[in-house]
Image (tube, one colour):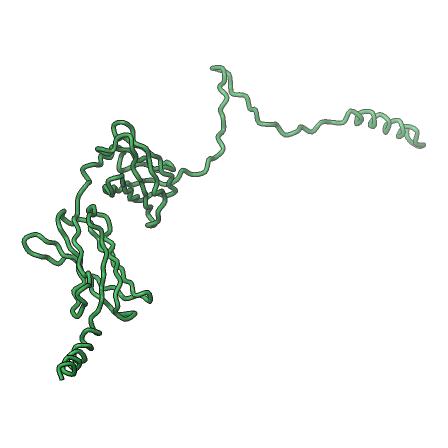
Length: 261
């Protein structure tokens, strides 16, 4: 009898166990302010199911910062990206606040946002006239004799340079010329071995120079003497030396005609 009762109780709880959903999310432990926060995950939810992913700021209380909706892909994965530009440094968490999940689900991650912008000092002018290249130079504190990864995004929101490592000297100084073809704003980001540092916006003004036009070189003359016209003169019409001879012959023939004296 006891076995029958236990079997019945197990059958009653089986549907609830079968309905427990699995969610596992991944996010970086540490991230620099300004860098996109990418949250990925897998779940047993059905394909196309919308799922909420929430970013919270944690201090003495929990404050919701952003909420994104992801849709479950055919491989049962999902992904959202949070913009951290302008956020305060500190402790944050991302969470999938869904009920009915299994006890083994990992639906929350804690992230530390840090600010490394003080490590970068840009010495190149942020506004430069168009010259076909954008000059980027500066110093990375604590990155001596190493290198910095630079990436530039142009006015069309397209990557025009990098990511490429540029060497730093014994003082952490670096410089690079980035080819450009148009004026506008260029966002240049910097990353070193410690991670993302920050980004600066450079503005290129003006337009590409017009095509070269022919230049007439002036030949100096002696003072008081008019300049000599060096342009080729039109060919002069010259009188043929045979014309006078033909005239004499014509007069002689006229004298031989009868009736004329």
